[in-house]
Structure formats: C-alpha cells, structure tokens
Image 1 (spheres, rainbow, N blue to C red):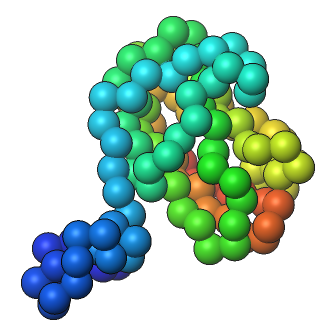
Image 2: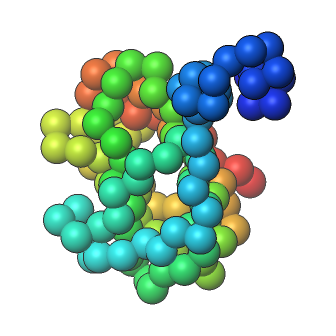
Length: 119
C-alpha cells in the first residue's frame, strides 16, 4: 500500500500522489432515499458523519481494479448503490452499511463490485 508522504518524498507531484494513493473526503452526508437522489461518491476514502435512516451513497462507475473505502459514523444504516448495469457481491444493486462499520469495495470486473465489511 503506498503511503502518501513517501510517494511525495520520492519526487512525485501532489496530483500524482493522489492518483497513486487515492484521495479522501470527510464529513460527508448521506442523502436521498433512492439511487436517483443519493450522494455520488467522488473520493477513494470516504467518511460519512451524518445521515437519516435509509439514505444513500452511489459508487463511481465500475472499473476493474477500482477500490473505494467508506466509514459510516452517521449513527444510521445507509445504503450503498451501484451505477446502472453493475452489481455488488455479484447479485444486488445496493448494499447496506450499518453504523460504526467500514466497508471496502473493489471492482472485480467491469460490472461487479465485491464488498468487505469490518466486524
């Protein structure tokens, strides 16, 4: 796993470092009650701090090798949606993330995300 400070210290630009290590977003608010109005994630590492019950997030487009991490500190269970034509864990188009849990999703194909949830 690349460590940002080491990537920068090796002479890479900040933009290259973000491309290699990923970026982070904190203080996010899960919104909406369907894929049509949920929050579109744009960072690699995400922390959700506020939500109402059953509000949601949308994963970026599925691309083999993509990884997205989500920490749910909102106090509510939130819904993670895939883009149209993709699934998560090979079957569903959405996935629930309980409060105080962290989920790492990674794309195993151009249409499939796999999810790992902390205990």
